[in-house]
Length: 592
Image (cartoon, rainbow, N blue to C red; front, side, top):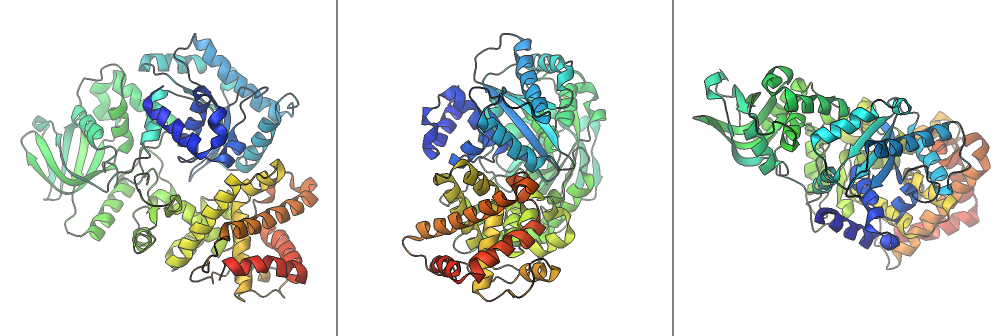
């Protein structure tokens, strides 16, 4: 096992002491889950909500939901930290066992499986299955490395197994796991300076003084990747390298056996820079980044198969803006990238990554104390931001979830339809184009962090734990509802079943900080509030379980929140004077 993985295991065990009893072989799968499917996080609640390894586990170690801007995927994970594989059929058996587990759950033949698998599989399936692009992935992580010919042989063997036809089958090797860990090191906005070799004899096509089209050296591009992949090379791309099995496979095939045809088969790359100049058979670049072609560059940079030392030309457009200034540069590069990217689907979030309102919000949140580091580009990572709390680093889609759930009171959409944050114009504008106080946003992030700590560190029983894990946005929204009531921003006379109630509740009218000067025992008090609301929602769900099915389904819709949950909050916590005094004795110590 490599030092990179060992260090990750050590850090993870420091955060989750319950893992100390697990050996490194078992921890290997947890590390893979953490960095591939949980954005580098792992705490006690993640362990309780993902880890199913043990007797009668259906060949599954962990279960994840891979949620992107465009899809939700249920991911069944098996890991083998081994030094060798006895045969390709050994790998086949791993995947067919997982596939049979999926079939058994579909047909309700589950009595032989352990309770953790049954609980976690059902909750994560219910959360993800109704997405229009829902898919089930079967994933194997191996603690060894193999050459490309071996990998292709294994995948070819698996492609012939009928039982696997309905699933995306993926194998990741030790190098992939190491790279996933290392990508949580953050880069820079540009590479300050560098050079790329060109095929000068092929000629240069110029577009005034601001653009040229040349054939660049693939090996020179690989050198740029080696030097700067984590230091700004892809910063101006809409998003960094996101794996896509079909596209990646075609590029790998071209690198292996069709290098002489690569120029015809690939769209090439675009480099945006502040300035460039030709110098013989190379071009010197200043403050540059690959605007389009991240996928091609990354696959060339990581390729280890046949013919890896054989150079070949790649079409490359190098551009610079005709005016100075960062704002103009960002707009210019964004337009070029949006219109030119055709190799991989661009999500709605990608298209907003260099928009004025995203850059402005990023800048506002970074000013003053505390600094908030906002990721506005998919694949960008904030791991290198040191000397700050974890909650001070957040993606713009996650921030959108907080604002949508808490300020706009739509926790169902925030949790289960995150793609609408960027795809729905009205929702996007309400979140990102209308002004929000930095003080409010800071306290929303703090509130979310307090809640995550509550879920991680409190010994809730299984039923309450499921509600707590699934109900984050609902519970945070309920607290903000109580804040609105405390500030006299609600009309309780409105009927909870009516549209007027929902419209009143959803008004974006919370301004300024949420928290008052917190007492020394604030953690105890706020955890007590969280616990009260978890119990309230669990009791309500339990009374409706026959019609709702699972906690996940119960918490999916904003209509349920407004007409059922808030109606119970109103009748239980606001109308009943005794309960009202109890909850606001706590609220008054924490919230303004």
